[in-house]
Image (cartoon, rainbow, N blue to C red):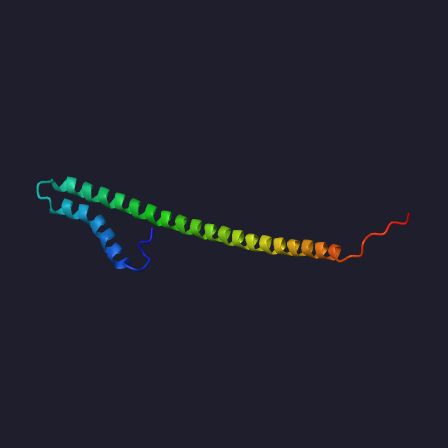
Length: 112
């Protein structure tokens, strides 16, 4: 996923290149295989290597998009929590203000 992200990106790229090149080198260095079989083997290894590289690139892009979406959702969640806290504090302050105003209000006098 993070093959092109530092630190250590060159080591990971070299390891990936070695992983793709190793089967080809083994096929080329094998002297016991007939030339027509060697050509087929190299073609198949290259085909599967291309498939793996394509899938890795696609999966990397999907993970990046998913991470961005999760980041946006977390940001909205944080904003909503902050708004709720502010409104809660305002509501508590208003309630305290009403209680304080009732505490210092003159007593109710009935007209009987």
